[in-house]
Image 1 (tube, rainbow, N blue to C red):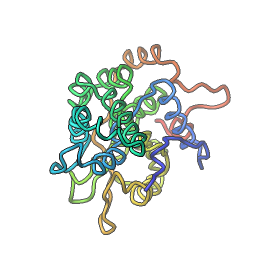
Image 2: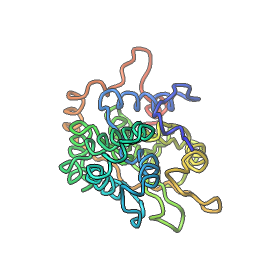
Image 3: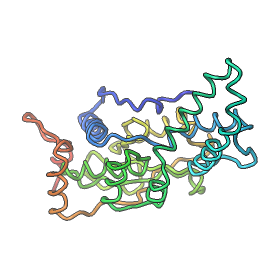
Image 4: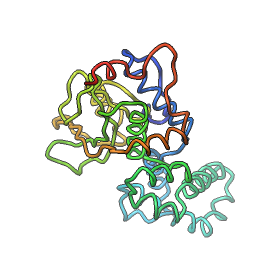
Length: 274
């Protein structure tokens, strides 16, 4: 099954100005800090690994990206033994070359130094910016935090990073998004008509109710959400940055500042400030 996640293209056909501005956030991030996601590659690499049992031990089930990287390291070494015989058959050459190219790509993105830093889970803004800018790699957590950061740099102080959770099954899925209420109120885990989710990892921005339908119906390769279970969005982190830090980030990343002579960024949120 192919999902819209595969392309990470974001349309500007939003229904309200806050969604359009949230779409701008993703475009600004993707052009200023371009990066790839290793977790978005999981379905494709699962297929490669399971379709080539001669090149990887199949007794280890693939649960996450670390399992896949371990399997690919094994495949890379095993290719030295298996590839000469396989390549004698012309009908297999294109197939195996595709696998070789895929392995080279993922191992390049996830070299040993990166794996030690990236999967250690650096949570502060410096480690996130270093990971994305230095290694060009970032997953849902980094995308959520960076989206929250851009909103904060542009005066939106009620955004937070949240986690998708299946109710009563906290660790069943692992996915982070950026959430804010367009009326300026803080998001406390209760979804209402003002709640908007920015998911740059998936290339999708919309009101929370629509995003939950998206996760259920179009992300089944990534999230196993039973039809009879409730999907919650729970806030987990929020940047509390001093003004001098924000000013430094604005100076370093001017492309992340919304510029318009005709209107403010997120006008309804500014209007509702006390």
